[in-house]
Image 1 (cartoon, rainbow, N blue to C red):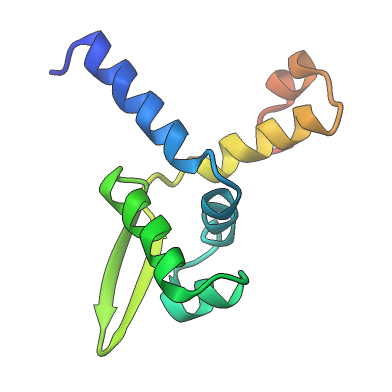
Image 2 (cartoon, rainbow, N blue to C red):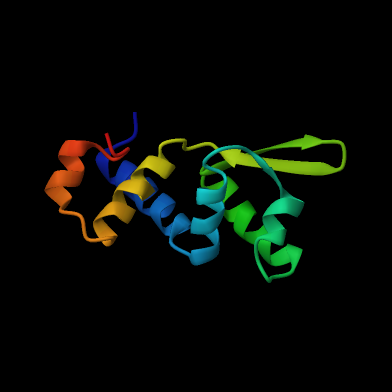
Length: 109
């Protein structure tokens, strides 16, 4: 079992890994289903190599996983709880009381 400092460092790395507008948008886009790299790239006005670098970074951190189907590569969330965490943060950013968000649950129940 990893010690507390190692776990803390890994949590920080994951949070830094999504702390970029493009990477955060990718995580939110993958909340419902996997997507092909070509479809992810179309979401942004960057070249495909830039998007691939973002995807590789998140894959290396364990945020995403990929699978190949023929010539296409599909990405999906490996850390499936990220969308609910981001939804909770969004509720607070929108002005909801953090205590109320916690009591209601991050999924808005």
